[in-house]
Image 1 (tube, rainbow, N blue to C red):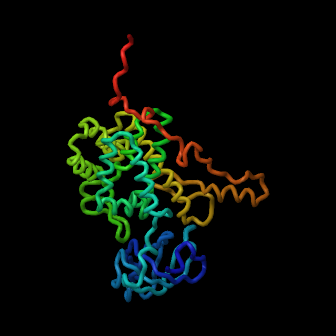
Image 2: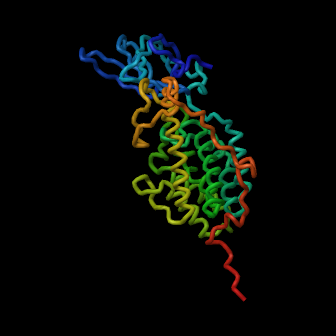
Length: 364
């Protein structure tokens, strides 16, 4: 394990560690000499870096996605930490442990995988259960699903992020289906399959990016391909139910300007869009506060995805307490419903889609 991590760096102290090069630019000083402008990272975060002197000796020795060992000084520039590099050299892959450089879910992926499969095994609709299991039973998809991030940078952008996002959505779907009396199985299918194309859309061997397939097609088209491939082995799957599943995939971004070719057009599709949007935005907000590099003040830097700055609530509230102002006791999350460890258990009748429900009996 490497040490120190970026989050352990102290201001106005020398800093020697190994980092991953996220971006590299060779710029020119007023004197005409080159300098380096870099973005460096490890699994704890990212930092901007500049190298002003002896640049010609090293600028052609490394590229983006290389590992480098750096020695320099952490200082504050424009209210954010910045590393001024004095020395650096490229590292070979054999000199580093990849796990030290890529953010990953705090949860064990195998534990999350078993929990996700538990949600699917509880589905009452045999057709939807068979489809989702066919996708997750594919060895390559299963391996990628455990590892893939949910996005390049906006939300759940870490190894295992896609699985963590899907599992969070399964939990939200369970509560929302009961509250709105809609089809839980259809929502769960959406939770697992809506982003399934990201297992091939995103590359995550080094810094996160897009594959050629992902750049050309996008995760919705790739996801439809995966579903179609598995449905070929399920000849009894109802054609209209297939259309609903496909609609969940193509409409889950909710708006044309967000990349959805269709708007959500039935209750579960609309509800799923909002659950997906809420889960991604809540995680985006949490990560923004956790990773923010602004030193002074109670607000983060501007987030383009959220279109706002975000209050660092804990810092804001603790400052009031330290100034002698009245304070509140620490907030606690609500306890889970005691019916089951994950909340109330839904009966099949509580999750039946009206499109497939039996017609009501006529009055005699």
